[in-house]
Length: 244
Ligand SMILES: NC(=O)c1ccc[n+]([C@@H]2O[C@H](COP(=O)([O-])OP(=O)(O)OC[C@H]3O[C@@H](n4cnc5c(N)ncnc54)[C@H](OP(=O)(O)O)[C@@H]3O)[C@@H](O)[C@H]2O)c1
Image (cartoon, rainbow, N blue to C red; front, side):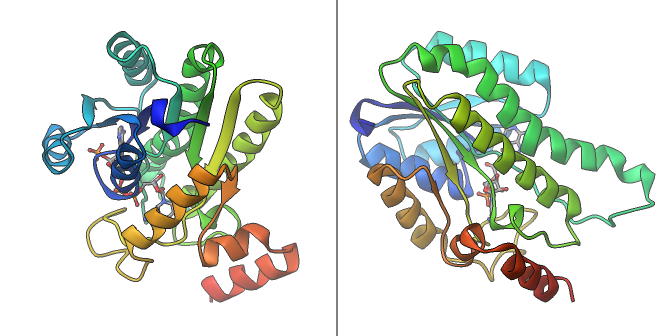
C-alpha cells in the first residue's frame, strides 16, 4: 500500500488514538480527513496539525453515517482508506437497570453499527481504487472481557469477528482489511483520568503506524498482543485476573 498517495478518512480522528494516527499518516504523506461530533475539538486538531481536513459528523445513527459518506466523497473523491476509530466506553451496571438501555444502545451504535455500516457504505468506492483499506480499531478486551463494561467488550468482540469475515470476503480484491487492537492506552476514553494507567499514547501510536506501514493486517501492543495470540486457557486466566 502506497501511503504517500492515500486519502484517509478517520472517524473520531480529532482526539486520542485517532488523532495520534492522523498526525502520523500526515507525516507518511497521506491526505487525512478527521471527523467527530465536537466542532471545537476538530478546530483544536486542525490548529495542532494544519494539514488535516475536518468534517463534523455523528456516526451514531444510520442517517448520520449516510450523510458523512455523501459529504466525504463529494469533498474528497480520492478517499481510499476508511479508518473506523470512533468509539465510546460506558461503565454501567450490567444488568437489571432497563432505564439505562439507551446508553447501551448508543455504545452498540457507535462502536459496532458505525464501523459495519460505514464499511458497507464506502466499499464500492474502495473497491474502485487501485489500492485501498478498511482499518477497524477493536481492543484487547475483544479477547477477554472486563465485566464492569460488558457492552463495550461485546461490541469489540463483535467488531473483531466482523473484521475477520470482511478480510476473508475481500481477500481477492484490492481492499486490505486491517485490525488495530490497542491495550489500555492513556486517552480520555470514557472520561478524563480513567485511562491514566494505560500505555502512553505516543508509544502506542508509534508502534501502530510502524505495523501499518509494514503491511501487518492485525496487531496488538504489549498486553493486547499477548491476548490476541493467547490460547483459550490463557484467556480464561486473563478473564479471572480482570474479574476478581
Ligand atoms: N484508550 C484505550 O484504552 C483504548 C483501548 C482499546 C481500544 N480503544 C479504542 O480506540 C478508539 C479511540 O478511542 P480513544 O481511546 O482515542 O478515545 P477518545 O479520545 O475518546 O476518542 C474517541 C473519538 O471518537 C469520537 N466519537 C465518539 N462518538 C462519536 C460519534 N457518535 N460520531 C463521531 N465521532 C465520535 C470522539 O469525538 P467526539 O466526541 O467529538 O465525537 C473522539 O474523537 C475507540 O474505538 C476505542 O474503543 C481505546
